[in-house]
Length: 251
Image (tube, rainbow, N blue to C red; front, top):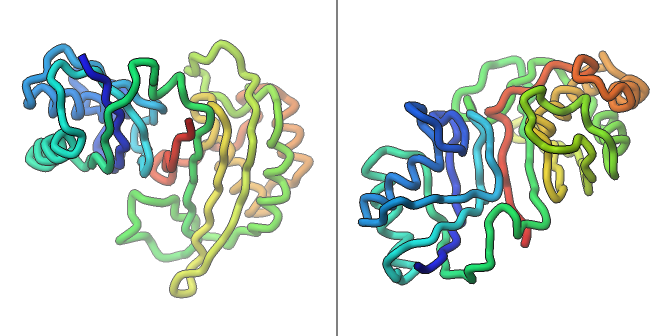
């Protein structure tokens, strides 16, 4: 058996998330099916992040132990061919052999997510399903300033899904930045965050609360009170999944 690592990009729209589920489309399931077509049996593809239904990835990392020795380039090309044939919106961007000690999830020391918001009245067309369409102007400066309250080590119970399986709600957030750029007069807002690991729905919860700040419905004090409440009920409505991207994983 040889262990291989994969750098993966995917459109999360058709999937019920990364994790394989019975009778439900998943990214993990599509990759394992493609490997089975290469003659690999009983394969487990393990990812660095278990993205939710509808969440996209530009830099997901995964690994798998394969029975046959493959040249990485040939393996990448073969997998992409089967994924393309199956109309799966998944691409293997890079592939390499790796040590048996490497684990895509547990060897990771950092993950970066970006949440995208497009602020305009008109509905999205090209970007539909790729960003959250917010129809009112947002105060990005206020959003960024408020976001700094969330960096560092905190009990993030308020921003944690009730279905989260993490043993502890305490996490350390390294960065949380909000920036904006204009494209054809339209504001594209990005909420970018880095941390070793995250709770279920944590980034989307942040995005929902920071949107409330940007709209002027919440102040910094409201966000601080929500954090200190350690109560899921104190969270603003969670942002939709289709604006979220797993951008990179650091080892």
